[in-house]
Length: 292
Image (tube, rainbow, N blue to C red; front, side, top):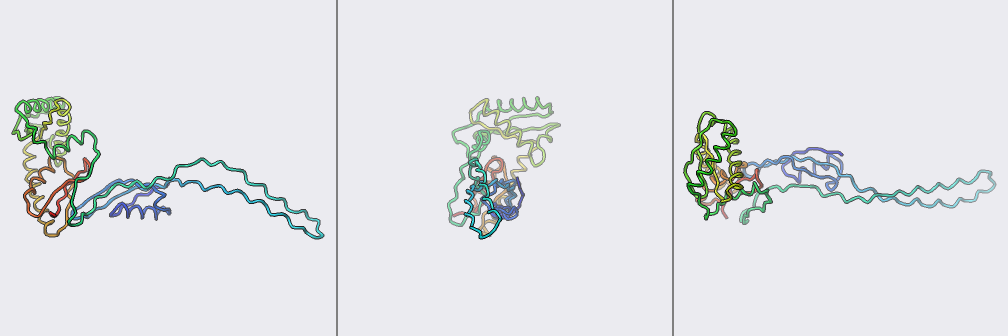
């Protein structure tokens, strides 16, 4: 099967370029989006792999009957024998070629359009985390919840043989903040907080199945969360200024749910600006747009 990888601004452009390079029509290839990069103010790129789909075999036409031999005057040559009819070929019916598989690409929203959250079919684990973006106001964590979540974190730290202390911090709504410090605390933060985010995700998945009360934990090691919140607030405000000046929406890099909440909260009172999220976990992004 022939295949080719193409990079272009949109999936449609990449599909046409791939079909041209393979020498077939766009309906004869399947397209798989390998990578999709979105930048600020609508600048984006996408890389696809296009595979040629085997087309349906052509119908077998019956061999026409040979024309009758013409009489030849005074000749000793025999009339040529009629060609034997071609053997019949039994053709297996083949399913029609599938239409190109194209993943949806976020487009710049025209001014005045009402923006709505896209419907996302997410796995159970991702859905549980995403619910934290719009917390249920009726769920309020208690001191007992804080003790149980902290005990769960200590259990994981002991299993990993890490020299890290965990203690319950402030409780706000459904969230219990757990502070981590000690000799190995830096290892739990990781580059750009990736390890801390992964551990927090694991803790909340286990807590959701073990306690099933809607309470969630936020982990902070060496004050990383506080510093990260300050940085995100500054970044969101700076981009909001540019969006308001240009009149164009901007798409931030993918963020976990609790960091998206920081951006939404930072710009909730910003005049002339609205925010919403789009995409699927773990590539869900915040869009900062001019208010309608």
